[in-house]
Image (cartoon, rainbow, N blue to C red):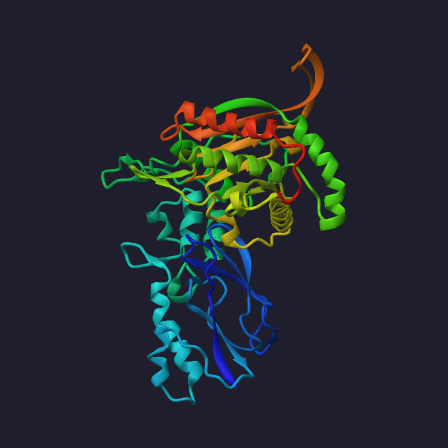
Length: 442
């Protein structure tokens, strides 16, 4: 029997740690390879972690609420194999211990590393990024956070602790001004400058109060931050997509029969956007202080509405390298798993440009907010039949055409009106000039 470590997996290019939410298996349970054994949360998504080996869950090293760095052990699995467990650099000290105490050696090592998992404040108290993020959302200053009682290891504040404090804090009465030694009332310490002043809201007896869930709070914060960071400008273009509509109508039935999937307009839009970005690569950039980072890969994020009403943006990597069939399959797969909360953190990161199909809600146009640190986002309006003047060999004529509005919001710090306007115009050109004779795999 061999003992192997289950480590916290890498879950995205910018994610360095995750919080253990709950274990789906208990110590002593038999587990299969690739079977989900616990749920973890990052600052982007909640997800399940599968087992890398089949065997018995011998020991759980990371308890509920603990924050663990990527690559650190979270459990010990006893397998039926004869090979010794692979050891990381941090296991070299444990390898010198006796074979009679392998579990104790690993557990002691993890305990020794626990002090490096979270970050310290100036007084030496540990706070996980998740706790700090919640405190930031709720406008809790560090001085106030230090007074929150912690039930975690060594008095650490867990997610449950901070949420419980927030709930009680919102119900607590406002403190009266403190009196100084000479009897004169003094003001309480001022709130942080960045914290917005709360607006008094009148609540009627029949009104319903709905608490924001964690995702909605995160969306709200990021949208406010984006408007604060990027000066938004939006350019609009109306495109005649009649050829595109006719082509899709011709192929959607065959696509359903051959591929067993739906052919929507979204992959066609993504193809046009990818081509336009290749023509204008300076829209595929990100801002890092005073530097502009020009991205090599074209990774298109697509906004997906969840059953809860929230939006999530999975990313299609290297979208310019996929044909229509590949794009359609990728779009459908990501959309389905997004609505089922089955996306991995890596599938939500790395986007360089985003599209939002507001036409799916019946809207003709919109002014979308940029996904930071990107500098552009394109809203796609509903396709509507309209009378239009068209040129024919015999002169101008009025005909019914399929038209839609494209709305391009861009970061005016680095994208001027000419570039922002030309990009959306080029997307419209690719849609209007869609080749009716092309096949699905071209």
